[in-house]
Amino acid sequence: MENDARLSHLIVEFYEKLSSWEHSVVRDKGMTLPQMHTLEILGANEPLRMKALAEKMGVTTGTLTVQVDRLERMDMVRRTPHPEDRRSILVVLTEQGRELSQEHHALHEQLTTDITAQLTSQERTLLADLLQRLNREF
Image (cartoon, rainbow, N blue to C red; front, side):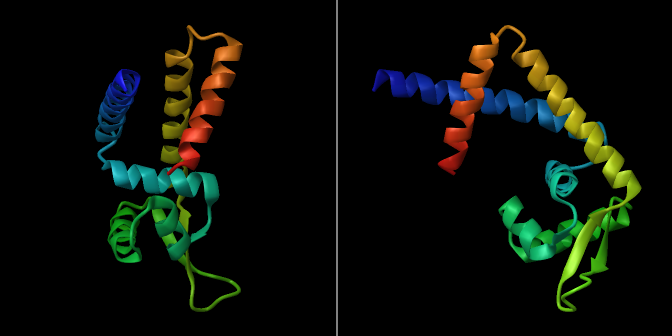
């Protein structure tokens, strides 16, 4: 049980540090964290239907609509009719949104390089495997 308490503390500490880093990076771009996450998800999966994007973000389509409205006004995304389903709307990145998504992704990769620099190749592989297993639990 003592080990569980230590592990819990370490997970929370890592989350807080990562969250603080993420907020500071996003704030420098004049965006909110949910807005940047929307761009990140689209950057990796573009284009997406509103419903699919909402599911990937873990929000309702109503919440996402407000988010996409704001990002559209910022010229980061645009809505476009689905070519095969007239009832569906696709969300796509604008060139500005794509650039910001790629820039943010590069920051994530640099952070990963920085915080795992002292790990061996085997430790990095083990960490990746463990994180993948933990992510499946969510």
